[in-house]
View 1 (cartoon, rainbow, N blue to C red):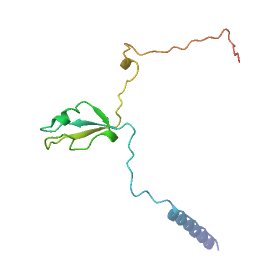
View 2 (view 1 turned 90 degrees about the vertical axis):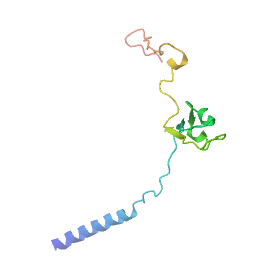
View 3 (view 1 turned 30 degrees about the vertical axis):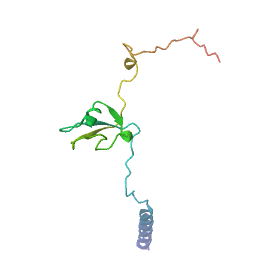
View 4 (view 1 turned 30 degrees about the horizontal axis):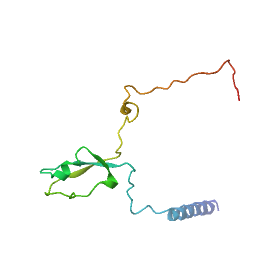
Length: 120
């Protein structure tokens, strides 16, 4: 009798586990690439680059605004390519980049008059 009870409990547990295994959500079939809002590209000149490509040297463009190859006004069949960046923005953008010689440091001041000054 004990063996029958244990068998029923094990079989019912297996059935419940199998039921939840079947009902789990299916993994997504196609992963859609999410574009970062400031992802950027910069041109990498190939051999025999045209003047249109040379005008874009040292310019980071937002990936969504970058022109496709061949560039408009391209006179040759060159091997130019886009170098990808996660972010167009540069680090250390504040303080020194605004023409300041040193970054601004804010210091906290204590305006309390006594040990327990809790005005409301």
